[in-house]
Length: 314
Image 1: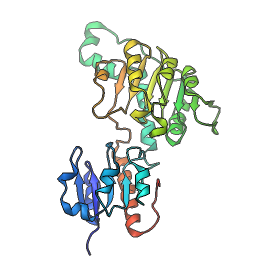
Image 2: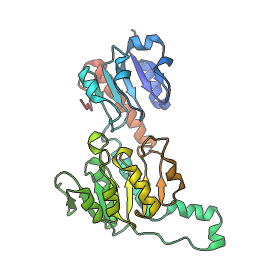
Image 3: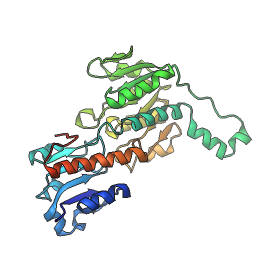
Image 4: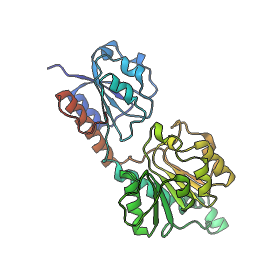
């Protein structure tokens, strides 16, 4: 029996590659590679994409494959995929929600603690010999009992807030409407939220409606003692305003797992000692990546079997 053909994007681990190659004829488009690098037979036969990465997947790529009927996204966020064009062509799109919620929440809280306590700087203080030569590391900030604001109270935002409850944190949140919460304070405006808390954690989804949702005014409201954590998408922050505030002291600290134009982040970040940098690895655990890959393959299998997708987005 002839195998169906799929195109994978970027690099997959062996635990994903082996089962995909067992089931399908697999073509691969590495990061930065041109479509011209693919053989003509790929354009003639590929029926589905196993999409991974942060590059834009637009109309030109989709239209190059006349038999394309399915895009299985590896990740919960699908803002880099032109879903409207896919829908106009009858191309189904799926993602991998829920399975990475716990990891993203873990990292967001971890960055909050690491940034507030200056943990990377403290490690460098020892490695550089400063502890022995110059004495104790500078005083940092407390997380327990502090006021924490969460921008977006979806699956991930709620998981972040729930992790901070045992720390005795006073939880505030931004959402379009009040949610069913255990005494948390709702704010209908992000600037109001930022002005009411010590730390702000951004957990909204990416996409056109959230571009720059945390802007210069909110960053200013957080203030020179404030701490901003972003574990969502680089597009959700006004990155220029954030850098200006970090450089001028208008904002105390930041911890970022996501950036505009990643992995080629703005070099201004590298000169700052008041920002913790993480390479977009919030779902980067072996356990979660295996589950993500399995769900991606399950959606592909459902498409080829003509059954409902497990986690469709259109």
